[in-house]
Length: 256
Image 1 (cartoon, rainbow, N blue to C red):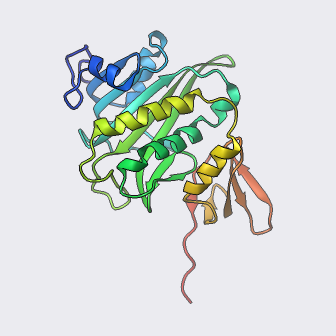
Image 2: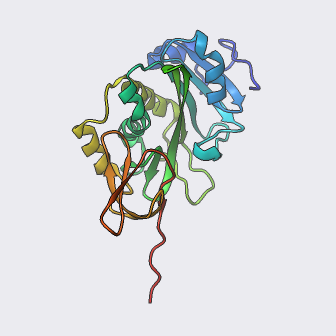
Image 3: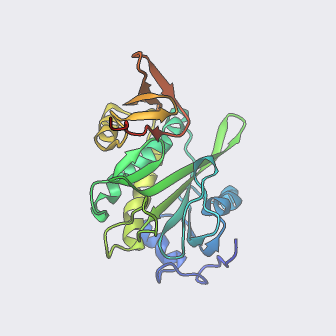
């Protein structure tokens, strides 16, 4: 962490922490100009912070994704946040990453250049380019989750990467927050595994369904189970179920 988070000392697009609390309807907002990762800050303050606490930074110097990947998070170019929640329903924890991605995609649709797609387990896409990613980190006390930190990185401006995209021209970080934060809070408040309605909504946005993949196992993506597992049908017709892993599309066949 590198900047003061004293209330009023740091502003986010002109708003103080208190103003953002009122704007977003959350109990606490912690602002930083620059941090290693908002996830790091969230874990430090979690024990003394209520559910719904939001950590926001203008810049992350070591933003992280799954499997140690780095997330580009330049100052002012996107929304880099962590939301602290305290869900207690264990089946819901199994699918929280899926729900967060789905609900976020639906909420942000109106700010994007086209319909937002979802890629298991935690990425948002517009076309073939990545718009956002999320990473959930849970702190446990025995078999009980004390808190869960929902890290979310969203490109507002398009980064200088061919594989990435931002929101539509002229959209702002405050507009994105107004859509995103309530959606993540709704996702965190749901109970149980994915419903049939949620699975149908995921299927309508799934960028992988029906495509050939080489990992986490070779085959064709059949969609999701209600428990959030990725279903991959192998060439022999058997279906492998994956709770974790990286989804990698197979290379297209070479032209003969």
